[in-house]
Length: 324
Image (tube, rainbow, N blue to C red; front, side, top):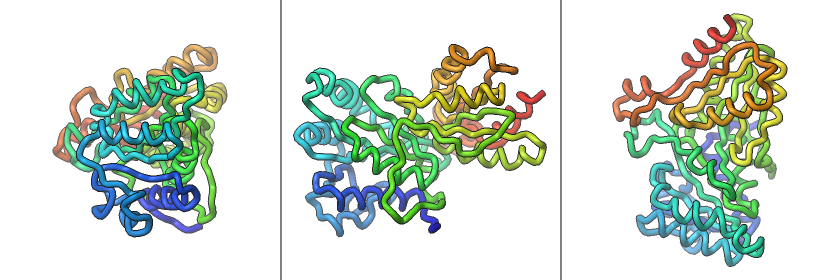
């Protein structure tokens, strides 16, 4: 199978969906001639024209509002919000309008809108461009929240998100745009709201999100040489969450390690820990362990950034501790 980058997989998903459905269009800051802040939309304006690749003013609220209005009248907008940190500026529209309008209209209004954004550190982007805020949106009923961890998933999940009838917050990790992986050339969809076992194992269940999945896979390779086999589960969609594979894995391994780049306090890992404590605590042979970023603004300096953010070594050390 061919290998392409995470960036190319996202671009390919949008290109294919725009060819498939004339109602799909994109809007956002600098997504046209400039090609987006991370060049994900590069070349699309030449292919589809400025009517379907819309450069907008520098206003996240305007982008979100225009996208929501377009979705209400039958279009399928893909709105890029440059950095998830700036989704705070459009949060009122996303949380109080997009997430609630189908419910408040008694199902008469559909909201087929995708909010594409980037999160995460590792590229020295500083405190206001490096946060992971997925749980802010996962807390809200009515939103679907997706975090792809591989190029294959990025393409398949985005195509499913564009075809979805409800609003989707689609969160890419800027540190993975150059990551290469196998991606089928044919048209395929990766289902939303379905967890994926990225690596089977027998000793420890590792639930990881986004780039932390890559770190978990790296850790698993090293730990396998020590006869410690990690079972790595990637939820992919954290709201609604497919919890069955997680509970089944914990019943098998008896140990749970949760890894994400968002702050450890009040992060997605706390929800997973609570679910397992509620529904599978009798299977546990060791305390639940969580790994996340330290509770500090993400530093600009590379060494300090590395200190604050989790990595493969943190997973290795935590796994060894769980096996003692």
